[in-house]
Image (cartoon, rainbow, N blue to C red):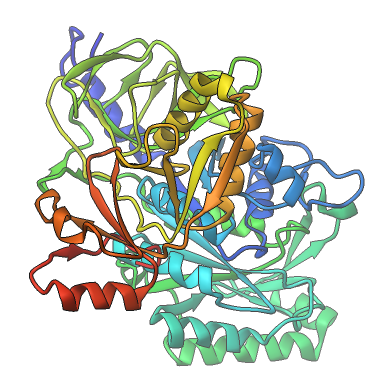
Length: 537
């Protein structure tokens, strides 16, 4: 049954808008090791959907975090694939999307950011803004995603709070609006000043930070009696911030020109409750999303959504394939038959699930802002649109320009079918781009990636999931440009250049370095070579 087919027209459309207002869909972004997965776990802990955090990898007796489920993630202590967590907090449905914590997987992060309405940017108190943070911020700026900044690891020695907030303005052009301010320097963290209420929020540690930290609110007089000059200094710094125009401005936040700033420690669960409350209060709910023509599709329109991630191997018992779909309009109902926009074919949604890390449960209905996992959706790819009744197609999610290339071959000739199926699966998930040519043949495709760790993931999964161990041979190419098929003959016979075809039909010319590219352009001034989307755009 499709949305709008009931006997009471308007009932469900009103419900879609109402339920969308209860949704907050956001991602956590940061440089590697800034504490992103730990923060994801801490937010779930404070929402009381888990009872004990697994936070820090490598500590004896600690569990792995809920959002890190892949074997390689647990072994290395980093996130290399995005994860979705959905839970209810204070009558608000929170869709929290964790993102890869390594620069080599920035393309996966880019896809996740296409599906959220806000982002939490973590800064390491000792390191401040780092290269990967800058890249991810630019993606948020490009997509006009409001950002809340959380200065993490304040329980460890670090830089001064004023220096860190100044860096946001100087390097990002993002006006800082601290809503909490640390009482004491980094490394001597016991609480924060709530700049809106004037209270002192005092935290109490729990064993290893495994459970939610207790907090107590003290008024200014009680805070001064306990902290003395430290409290006085904190208040004076807060007053300086107000005098300099750093108080909260909601319009500037929603426009992406300013960022609320909080201080805390995810591993100790200090400041996490304030962040969760702030997300509910300030982060925008889902709104009308523009289609490929730039026309917004109202929330009350019939169901529509787009796929922002495809992942296999989450259930090792069944080896199924899960497509993550962001609901954009209307009401999703499990079992409804919708239309696959790119093919015009019907798509049945019988197997739909809500996701919590690796754990899943059947979902019957979902609303704008929710993330639905569609099981065994073999026909779906990243960027595909599904809709009911009224046709719509959302903008495609572009692929990044690959910078590393390797020929891949089956290590066992007798397992070529498994090899071919595995390569096709990894490509559909967006783990790698697959390039082919008549010269190399089907048995030796070229894998193209943004970062070299993607090769490790592909090799690991080919052996463990598809029972098709592979051999990889790195190629010397560093640059890729799109080229029209009619221009390909101009490059025939050129050294240190190769043209291959991506599965989507795009012809890519590969070059060993920028100097070789420049030389080719001088030799063939009429040749049109189009840049691809770079990972730092």
